[in-house]
Image 1 (cartoon, one colour):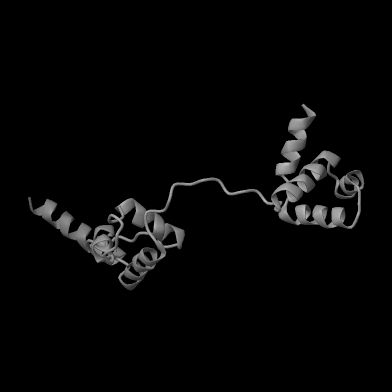
Image 2: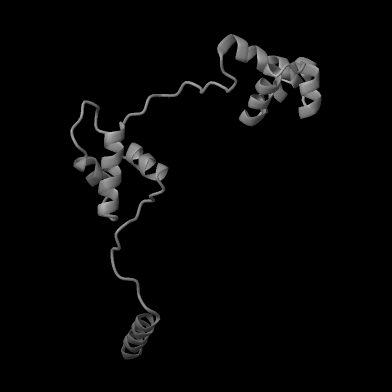
Length: 149
């Protein structure tokens, strides 16, 4: 069971702590001394050092992901169309994209790219919102209609 706990501690190391461990080991410090100084187990220090020796790195590798459907050029084009006309629909953004070797990105992909850069969808107004004065005038008109009937 201690191995699991140590592995969890190893995963919790920040990049700064990993760099400190490597620097102190290269300065000649022992695993136990580094562990006591940093408040870590000496096995955590040993694992970090071992990774440095065998792989030449101390950071975690990124996981494999699904490849992106759009490239940087298309992402810029999506942003350009969306910022030039904020009320443009996703379908019209789709039509305005430059031709490329990829299939046309879906509306969901376009929405995702806009969300990544902090742009939210905006829908055009169907009608102007009523002011409190307009509401009151409508209510007055409706009341007059009921009185006459």
